[in-house]
Length: 467
Image 1 (cartoon, rainbow, N blue to C red):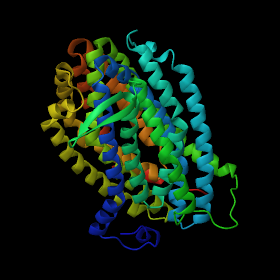
Image 2: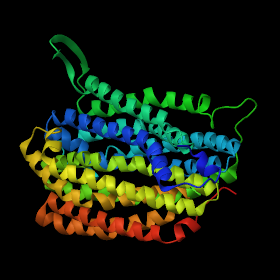
Image 3: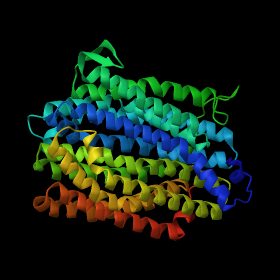
Image 4: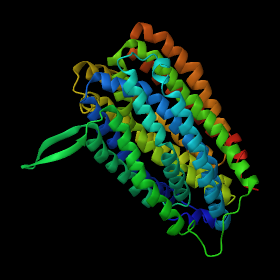
């Protein structure tokens, strides 16, 4: 099933629309699932070091998500505009936009890296961390900051390629990213040791860097993957590869337009990830066990919601190309279809999470107290997954149309007026369970708000095409 159906304004049956969504979604879903397994293995490796080491990473996890979210947000405008130009069959403009986006995004990544490094010495203490875990947390965060420009490069190139409808190669490379991360973590976290596998005994080298090794493994994996992604886009991708005689032209109007689309997404990430940082500040007084259980439960929950991000990528691409092809009715129809499919997917994964919560946490941590608390909060969160899926996928559809203000406002309302006040109210009485009850309530409210907005017309009327 090809995106040419959208670009050529052909009619699309429901069966064809479902097939198109699946075709665009499955490579990204596989990549997201491999990312989840990578996080599981990472967390399991760190969990074997002990609860204090796990707490050190959990303490700064929300701050690393904040930097990653801002990194992603800055690329959004360029990716949206490239998808729309592909939909309008103006590949020359799309290629120039892609090259401008890569360079501008890299510059922004360097700025984020510098800001993160400046904040790293005081961040653990600002989040309420104890002296016992603060040094490890600082080292981990510093190395993560060094990887931001490479993360930015991999993210923007992946988005550009996906915006053309070519999902397979980025999916493969992101799967390899996960495998390399696991390999490098094995070599960086633990010291050299003797390993027996399938009856063979051999000496496995290791740097023995502990918590810092987990961050270094991630950095090295991005080094290996980002360059091939860039090469494939510039030399292989049929729509975006270099053409003889074409040179980069800086077009300030296009850059400003892309940044205008990206700014609300950046604000949305500040709203969401900033709220997660505040949540960490609420959780940290509850102790190292609560911090570790919170971090591991977030990792375990990603089994449910990461596949929804695969559908989100498909929704953004489909809607963006419909807008570029001037098919608003089809954009609306496919936005609803992808949202419903995503919610059905999240019902299934949420049910599995509820049933197997103890086993999911048990795969990460051998500590009985952490496992029991983590399983409890996971089962609470299972009841929020369908509506969480709705908000994820509808966000993608609206971004594809260029409407990034609406999702930002909805996230602002739900995160800061519902989750944070309710978590602060419940945590002193119910501990970590209270924090996750607040999260469950907020995600259900957020999903309802996004469905109501999708049912209206304002998000599609605000579609920001490149003039």
